[in-house]
Image (cartoon, rainbow, N blue to C red; front, side, top):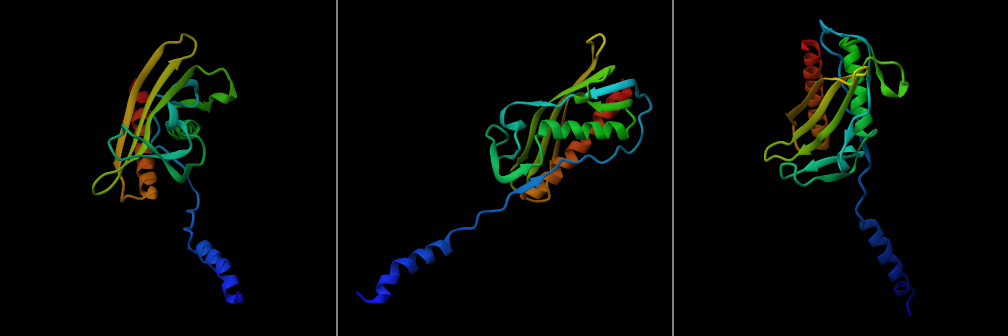
Length: 196
């Protein structure tokens, strides 16, 4: 057998390895609230604590979600993740925003376990990129409630939804749209606190 023929299987193996598709690199994204544009006129007296939000199933997991049929079928994005669980990430941004709005003497995460007068609880109902013909949309929907800790009285509860057009069909565009939507939701929630 000729030496060149002996090397043929090895050469084919090397060529096959070179032709393998490259695996996309993992990407990590954050939702970040910008500070409130103004302080509330009627803040809570005392301390407000905010618990991590709840979420059903895949909505509370780290992979970004995508839907192409209006939200009845969700897919997790491969290689695109939130930096932390959305339940904690959105709660942290809620705390940051309400602090900047002066919504109470202090706004703290519930893990501090201090004697708060009020508790904010919430649920993430939707947090996803929705495909569109021209551009995609970032959809965020949160149910947020304020409870008096001493009486367990529900002071306010409302579902806040924002559908923000993305600049394009990219994941970056969807995250930017979700950030804009989150800002809108937090601004409306703070306004409702102020108007109570």
